Image 1: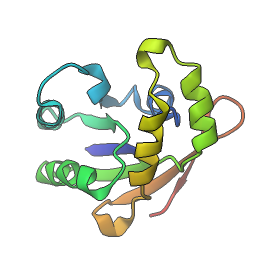
Image 2: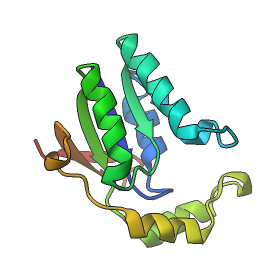
Image 3: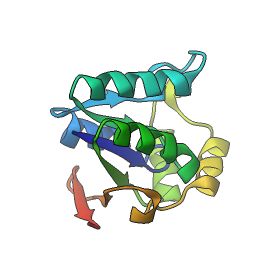
Length: 150
């Protein structure tokens, strides 16, 4: 089993990447799917736990900007014997702001939200507990190029 943790700014391509590359194999868990719910983190962890218990691969599609966000996910994945892989979307604040501006108003993130995430965002490392760190970049043809770090 794999627990894929997508890490990057809002509008960096994480959900599109999920749809193109992981949807056929991984259950999708995102706090965006329950924006008004109370205890969003607890609900997210429950959904991940349920999918892993059922033997499914899981992709966590949030900004996941720092180690404080990753650690509970990594621990949960490890508890199920899952391979934990970070998918790192290097920050492109200008590109993210432009893509965000094209979103429907109800899904658009305020600019202050992008800046706040950028301030917290850091590149994941193997030392953080990941089995692998993969860097994801746009390929210029509507898809993605993925590079692995081991």
